[in-house]
Length: 171
Image (cartoon, rainbow, N blue to C red):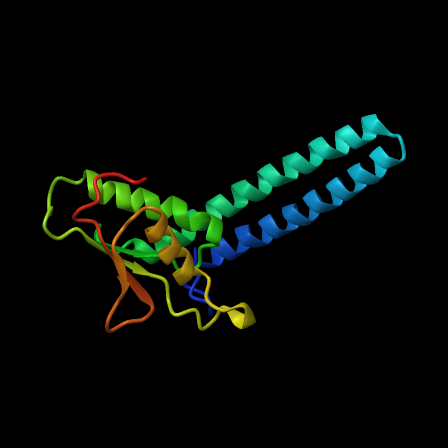
């Protein structure tokens, strides 16, 4: 099995699951559109069936994205210690899950109480296109929402430093 990273620095397997998720999202959208049309035409039973089918496609989409996220996260973080996390390649909905898990793990870790700084690698957002960076603002918003002292790394603007010394639990 070839585990090389692709041009976008993502494991090839994750791209397969992301593509499957996109296909399921398209099927979900089609089912929901057809469901609405059936409902407005008075075909309520058909509308219900199509709605349920659309929900099933959403579940498949979510499952494929979850698998892709785990592949990407594990590939990006397998060499890092507890105090470093790389969120490249994750979509916005997946960031909070991985970040919360790591922050909670650090907070619950009774070792290294004096050096509980988490380095969060987001990148600068240079590949985000015209809409601009997404990961970095999401991580900053996460820190603000959870009252976590943070700053952009002084030497690397693609990283956020979170100071968890005084954080006892997530809010």
